[in-house]
Image (tube, rainbow over all chains, first blue to last red; front, side, top):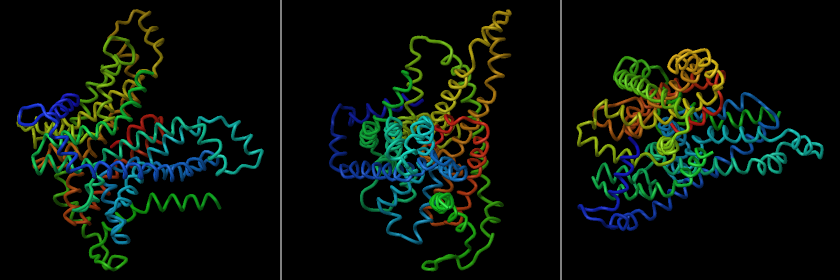
Length: 231
Length: 260
């Protein structure tokens, strides 16, 4: 159900009017090179923002457990993407209309949605760090901030890296949030391009080539998941 | 003191955008540049609950039930086999069920939509069910495999040593033990289907409208109140689930959820 359309789209990206060609990728390069950069930029900024919020919050929670904050952090996990798109649109628009439709607003919205997932993964990793390490650092007078920076983050580095890859790929492939928040002109996220290329221009081959570019960019996540199976 | 600060900070960040939904859903008139609505009331709520909001809700629920039943009927035996047996091709099957998680879905759904047009499935409920099954099966197969893995094989061996057949062992030992996980899996798939937007928009349009699609149409049409009321309705199942999961479930089920 998934593998077959995936294959169809990869094959289609190399064909044009029944012949094998790289022309679709030429079209992508000509029309969408800027959008590829934009997409990677927004996803990277969104990922950075997510962790900038999640790392201090989760570190603090690991050192001083506090239920209500932990519950709040997990809330975005259960808010559907479409709702996030609309909520941030109405939240930001009256106060900062320019920000709401800018790349920064989009990155903030994506970061908000992924905060829950990041918190879940980070809390798991931070809680796996042995209490003894924290205890000995405390003897030297380290507070939650120092503990997070010098003990928790280095020890949970592998999980941090994996979480970052997953979140980056998810942001890269996001569709509904940029669709709800986007504006007419300027650079767009790749999925929006695929949608319009396919839906409005009926140009399936170029849309497929755009898709393949997105698959390649999201390869990191595929590898992470793949390694999970082999284990 | 630090606790209060943390709660206030996180609270504003997380609840702020959601609170604005509530304000919008109650705003009967709110024009720029006023910082708060000029007229507040329940007019939109009463209008929604008696009108066109019910049809997408009904369609979405029907689709979600069908998807849940089909996904679990498929995932129950498959999850069991994947958890218990080592056979050639096992890794390939697991990989196939991971791809939708790891790859951007939209181009694939676009490709599926094109095929569906050829078979007359585009814009139909069966077409949308098929698209939802892609993600639904991923959740179901992975959670069921994890559930059966967590059941000690010794229990099954004990039943077999007492003369129970494989089928009977499965029905009387493995299945009852897996029941909580099965329920969790069903809830996940059901919610996924209810909230799924991308595939529904591509395959379902213009005839099949579920709540997320309805909300999107309202939002881009600047019917912000209608969209906000729908958005709140869409958050209810997730909120209920969050409360339930906090009680009963392990974190690993939750990880699946970040992707809806």
